[in-house]
Image 1: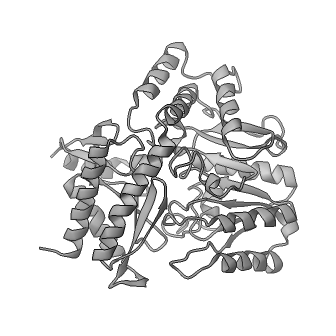
Image 2: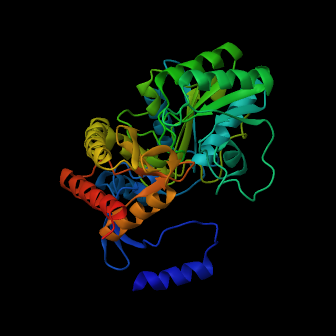
Image 3: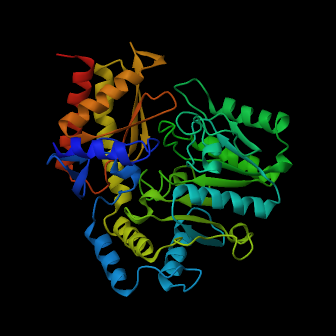
Length: 426
């Protein structure tokens, strides 16, 4: 088999720390992917919520090809271009909040997070940052310090940057109420770090790697109130939840709360490397000229792709489509949960959904082994799934928002078969 040869080559040539799967892609189209072994797979990972508009959306491909005929790189710091400005204008208008905004572009989600923290520190003159348990904000030094999950992201990498604190994220399944989470944050500000030293609080509207835990609107409202009281910048990490994934352009829009800064990446450019920070103009402008950016930041090909993605989201009404997809997924999962007590919880927003697996119906006992078995069974049947969660027992479902109904039904049938096979071995 071709993939077996590729696996051997990877092991010999690629860093062990680059975790991966043995699904070697040779071609992809919308929600389908074909492997080096000639297998057709339905893709419920979408490049980890990157391909919200599907693999190789024609509008995105056309936009990138058009840009390639003009130029592929100048570095915006050297010879800027209109498309960068146009995309900044679009994001300034689309992100939550009725206030003057500005935008800067980078390449990865971790870069967006780091630049948002730099802006908050420059604006406030403070250095502390508060994140939450279960959070994921990247693999860079600051990103992994902010991340609320030790293995594999922090283990073995030594001391983390100072003045990074973690508060408790509300989680109904774990018995953590909004009131308890808010009380813990207030205790943190009274006992561990003076709020006058806190530059920013960073939070995901739906935790990604943490297990697709949805932030209740009242929790985000409480964070907004605390930030306003103490002059703290509220950073909304929309890297996985943004770009129509939750049924709104941004996850925060479900709560009516506007962050001061919004970080974006993943679905922003339909598979091309691009991230952004958009927010209050006075905060974004706090760093001095030259303090933000990077050689490839806002690459013209990725900018062209992002402008096309925004048009696709609007033209194909992908926010509404995300709600339709999510409704179909949750309905199927809830029926499965009635059959199988091992499914301890079903949750999500729009087309950002997950189910949590437990032992013998005991929601306090995570079942990571069953989780891995279901992922493997699904893969064997032609469906790509991803696991997540701080207890490694959550399966997340991230189909492209452009997936046809018949392929969605096919994928859910495979998922059901995989669950049955893992729970009721022949």
